[in-house]
Length: 371
Image (cartoon, rainbow, N blue to C red; front, side):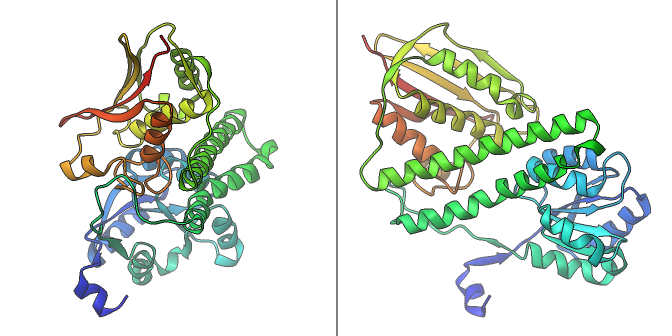
């Protein structure tokens, strides 16, 4: 980065890097905490003494960096690493171990770690190494508030697709490799890995569908296959499948029994999944999600309420723009809500922000009835 970048205000040094420390030796955790507090700008937001607890803490805290020991009881670092990446996809994992890098470093990197360090060097080298992993926070640039989005090409979308699928592919590969050693794993660990593979495959499919639709919109629109569809039943089936959401957020459902609408069920399913995933992604762990429906003479609505703490006026204005603010998108780089609205409008309906206050927001899918 050049001095001109600083002077232009395009980047700012990260004020605080949030760190989760995972090691089964309390004195080592204390040493790491003291080291980071001395060199700054780091905030140790949590500690864990085994892999299982580390996964739960990563899901709860969503740290910038996880410092992960390899040799631990209950679940070691190599076993926990793929699931930490599932629990907190934006975190970077730096593995710390007493083993030599030649023995374990390559395996840790293959499983998704961003780097590897031997514990003997943490006092003098840990701070600079963490600055390499999370050196800067990019300051948001002003964006237009119209719904046309920035001028993008198919090449731009393809580059973004390659970037965004890399994480679920890495996790899928790591989990599959773990299952190859299934004879060494207890049944509950195998079951957990299979559930994680299902979640990552679903996340990958949502990404691919989102980018596919974005490309089609660029060249003229979406092709719909309309069939009479019981939308509340489609919603209930989807909720039964989204165990990664229902396990971490109680979902309160109050929907009509049967409402049949002429829609493309695959694309409406995509919209519903985006709204539900969005609500879970931006709500604190274990806070509820409320799903309700309403019907009048002209239309049927599905409403998804979260308890994320509200939105600023600026973000409300830009929610549905292509490559809009990263605060709320459900999949990909700001495409989730944009694509969802375009799918709904292609059906003659809409997706919109129905309500938003200090406690949370309500997003609605509105579809016209065939009367």
